[in-house]
Image (tube, rainbow, N blue to C red):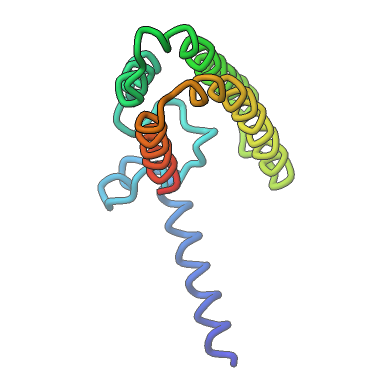
Length: 161
């Protein structure tokens, strides 16, 4: 029984020393193969370390094409696009505000509250998107609905990974 506890304590000490050294000297952390994203919480990072993501306009154009929106369906598509744009703008504004506020690491409670705020905003965005997508989906012929089902199913599976 004492052996696993000692092993856990030793592992925690080694990780603590490694993280402390890496934070003190980020250039050495990179040379050891540790990514900065493993050491610094995302809210503290000032520049993105991942490849540039597709722009919102490009994502909307791809979704429009993937859903095979016809000219007749365009008036029903517009509220969907507006909802997606509003959701993206809201999240960008929230992220920028959080980054401006957080000069130091948040406490565990602050971190949980932050997660709750973002989850609530995401839920509200999904409610709005669902309401705007329903008339478009209802107007689609069955074959196009199957395409939409696959497009959204594929999108959700990619997000979960």
